[in-house]
Amino acid sequence: MNDAVSRNIGRLKEEFGSRLILDTENYPDYSRDASEIKFIPAAIIFPENENEVVRIVRCCRSESIPMIFRGAGTGYTGGAVPSENALVVSLEKMKRLDIDPHKRRAFCGPGVITIDLMKKAMERNLFYPPDPASYDESTLGGNVAENAGGLHCKKYGVTKDYIIGLRAVTIDGDILSTGIYNENELFDITFLLIGSEGLLAAVTEIAVRLIELPEFGPTILAAFHNSEHAADSVAEITRSGIVPSVMEYMDDDAINCSMEYEESIDLQSAAALLLLETAGQNYRRDAEGIVEILRKNRAFLIKEETDRKKADRLWMIRRNLSKAVKASVKYKISEDVAVPPSRLAELVNFVAGLRDEYPLRINSYGHAGDGNLHVNFLTNEDSYVKEGMINKGIERLFKKTLELNGTITGEHGIGLTKKKYLPMEFDSPTLSAMKSVKSIFDPFGLFNPGKMFD
Image 1: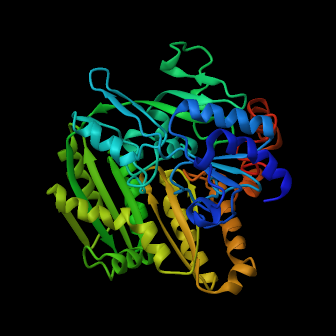
Image 2: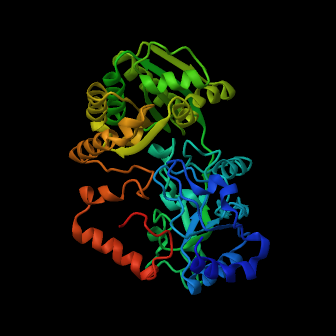
Image 3: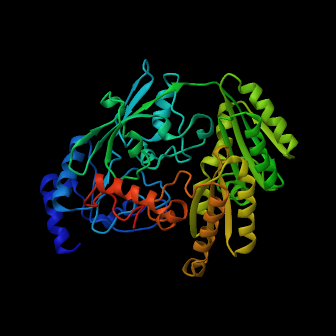
């Protein structure tokens, strides 16, 4: 830490004392996120309420200290990685969780873990559907920052579909109250803050709507000898009008990683796997229709599980997958793209072609219901990373995704890793408008600097 930064941090130290952590090298988790990009922050602090966030922001604003607002660090694009001379403001201790069962809504701190909200809602026969695969780690604040999706997104929607209001601290230390917090439906900026990756304001409270807990049908596991047959099944299920509550895809390399990490069922001969679930009034009829389509598309194994504990065991094949892939290799570069579900087969075939061309392991899995595919470039070779081979593969993946009328980020955001690719998807006027919004909210560039835009 240089002298100028030390002087600027000094006022924070006076105000928060030993709660301001300066020996940040002893807190390695706060120098990175799941992208594994690392940068040591100048300091770390853990506010416990909104008033403390206001005090921190006002102090940093007056001393020109960059701020990185952090949830659990489960993101894959470097969004929570510290910037130079930055203060990491971890919101993980802000865990207020109050549920109003009569109005079917909840008021949550940004540090609430996703699964905790889901469990509390279920105790009252209510349901909060957005459930990223990391739902047992990810925070609601992080989910709002990235507009996280999840396994249930096809039928029930993503984070933005359940946010009914936010409280957030501006760069001047003022409180923004959106949605139900101000009862004014005109010019609601709630959806401007959702997915803004911590660039505009510090979210301090989240109001979400809940729905009635639906009836769930069986978990359906289908294995295929050909990945195209799995993708064709996804397209046909979509065309049929059946909307599964969950429809997840995994290729053979991903399956093998999962089996090595925690074997749940013998799937060694599978080239692709679909995991599906139905819910709602028509769950039985929908399940029957899905099974018929899977058989038509040559699934060699179809397993239906109605016992919830046994079904949860099958879902661990998918829930543990990111950890399983990471444990299998030295370098894991994860990208998430999305295409219309009807074109998923074309994207799956393209990824298979990349595997044949490059001396890398490349696997894919994701939320097939909305065409969101996570493509992982994997290697143990330092030279492949240094030579830029992976970056070339990523750029080709993005180009193909856009050709298929898709998007280069399905749910992981832009952060550091994708900002150079933004011009591939957005034209200059659109990018200029985005930057203008950032400059209005944060004219000093102190909120999460260096992310999304150069």
